[in-house]
Length: 323
Image 1 (cartoon, rainbow, N blue to C red):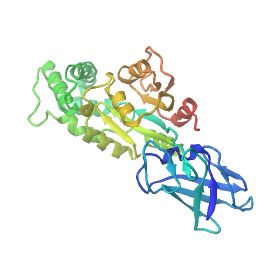
Image 2 (cartoon, rainbow, N blue to C red; image 1 turned 45 degrees about the horizontal axis):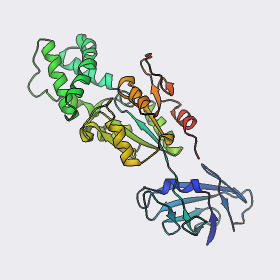
Image 3 (tube, helix red, strand yellow; image 1 turned 30 degrees about the horizontal axis):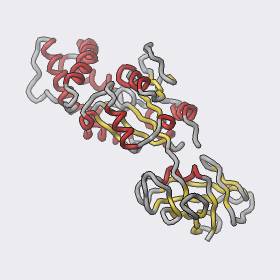
Image 4 (cartoon, one colour; image 1 turned 180 degrees about the horizontal axis):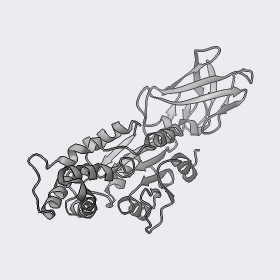
């Protein structure tokens, strides 16, 4: 058994994770030194500077919101003498083997328009229904009608919102939707394209320790389908049809606060829509990154601005440095 004294920041990601999930690796490359998001000091370990040993910490029991103890985690080492079982030890108010919890860093995201090409998905379907020549004008009208319908009917599912907007567009165009096409937009949504840089940018943020949450004006089945296409795990998804309001109303952020208990200092919101996301984030005192794909100009200013998600992880780390 090898005792290790670890600094507090190592164990903040151990809280509120699933049983048996591997959450962190430590690389030991010289006596008295461990590289990780924060420093830790191994004791009782004799190893020449050229030796590389990887320690993988795994949850045995998860206790959200309180300290983890040595009985809650286990560690194995891979290296010249692997496998080696490690005994975690340290000092805290809970006694030897206990490590105080530390708040994780959360990045929340709008999905449609930010991660998924909302305009391309809707315009393609409008073109199919009404003709490609009119799809651009119809898309511009859609942008005007949808926020009004969401404001007037905050309890509606997003499928119902899209169907109502589509019906109004058809009425304005002096036509009637073909039978069975009322849910054309909702049915097409899982196939809307993901922006090409998104999976890599999200994966890099996760690798740096960020937890990811989607705050979406949509329904549970729709967001889950889109996140599956994106292919990067999210820790949380909050949707309009379950909180009973649509952004820019603050319901999503209130639900996020209730679910995570995270403070503003550990939270950054990332979104393309200035109206739906950047303005309410500003009003709520949440730092924001505006993914300004359309090159717009609007007030209030976001905390940071990017043309797309390339380089997102660097900006997130600038706003909330790793502990």
